[in-house]
Length: 192
Image 1 (cartoon, one colour):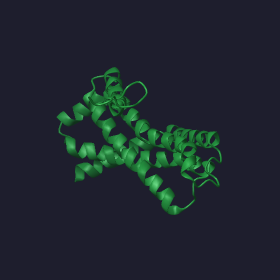
Image 2 (cartoon, rainbow, N blue to C red):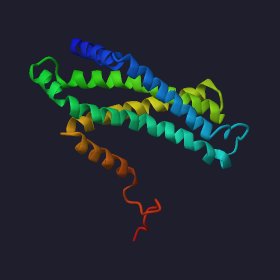
Image 3 (cartoon, rainbow, N blue to C red):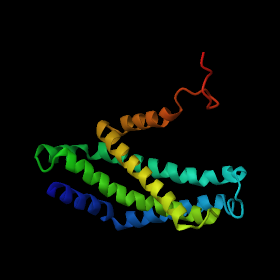
Image 4 (cartoon, rainbow, N blue to C red):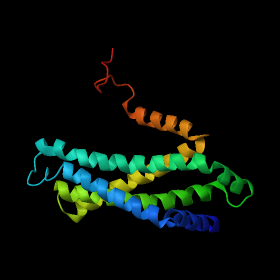
């Protein structure tokens, strides 16, 4: 438990150490979220039918996609670059794999959940989705779960990769997997 707490503290410190990068990341998330909101400005205001769901699923999809892949790609790029340091510390018995994995997952999940909510708040407000605490809480909760999934996948893919090119190849496979078995139009071929 002490390894986990020490590593969690170190991972959180690593994330906030560079204040310029941290503030730039927050500004980036808010500006991209505002851009998404402006693209679909007022699309959901005053419309409460299933026929209008298509116009509001775009910004929600981008927020969900960003919650997973921003986190995943950040970690996939990080681990091949820091592999030597992580292996040296592990071989010198500074920590074991389990506490390190869960500490990194916890730290990344906390900050990436906050980033996902920062990204999603402007579109949620600008598109005109219903302003109830329960609905926004559900949306934010789903984004946090997606961020945690992205962090876990990013750690696994990043640690399995020898270099960034191999990691990108594995991420490409992850992106293609959900559409496997479908033709060019996205439909399943007829069963014989």
